[in-house]
Image 1 (tube, rainbow, N blue to C red):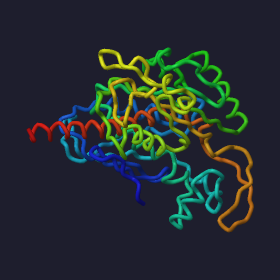
Image 2: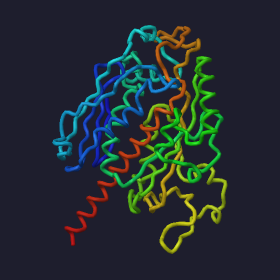
Image 3: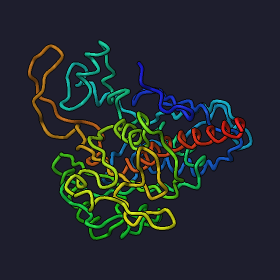
Image 4: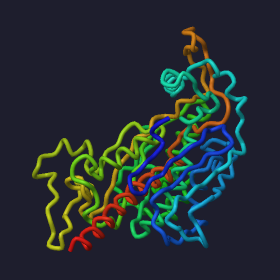
Length: 362
């Protein structure tokens, strides 16, 4: 199956299924000599792991990563970094009733039409379980670009939103992580939690948005035409399960403004008075904060009876079984940050290579 490689110079290939023996990946292009903090890598995996609170799936996975190559004495060697994460707590019998049934808004139908076969056990390769590999790679990418700071938070659940800009919030990692839903605004958090618990009790699910803020990005990262920085960020975000939309800077609201209202005027230090551009102009970073928002749909598996079809075209009724998230947003935070880090690490490598070329041309 194509489409399992992400990145150009800093590349990650992932493999594995939700109910297989293990998932894993290969990171290629990581610079040599990067001293890795393995505790921080595990912390990132713990932020994504199931069973961490009452509002996420209760699948109990330790999510311990095993590195196979590319690291000696805690330092990267410049050769491919191979890793594995073993699945421990999968219950494939929970999915036996889906062997010949297509779940609404899942990939069951499309996978079978494309490949002629599908792994019905937890969605197989289409499961969000695959994103654990992205978090391993992204946590290493974060340590490559350690001077760039990436923070994400849940900005809305259903119709409940934080009515503040990110500049008016305490976006310290400590403040975000103390919230079970990873919302930095305590007043809004209570309403969000109440809604998620209500959906869970009713056997339903709810979606929302995540906002990501990137600080200390140097100017000049990005490419001018087909590989614009915001385009690559959008591609990265839209590759995450359940993501339905992406906007950066002023986003769709910017279409309601005039040019004189929207233009970011310069200060004498080359910063801008406003940042409706979202830190990117012409596809290239300008040194200001980069910020974007991503929309997640409600989880498709619900604990309510639904009418659907089987592979033979017959109408049947199904009802969700097993362990599922009533809201995917809290566990999606480290995935969003990891994919962001992979994009930025790739551009950091491009920038480094470009400087090397210029030196040798001179």
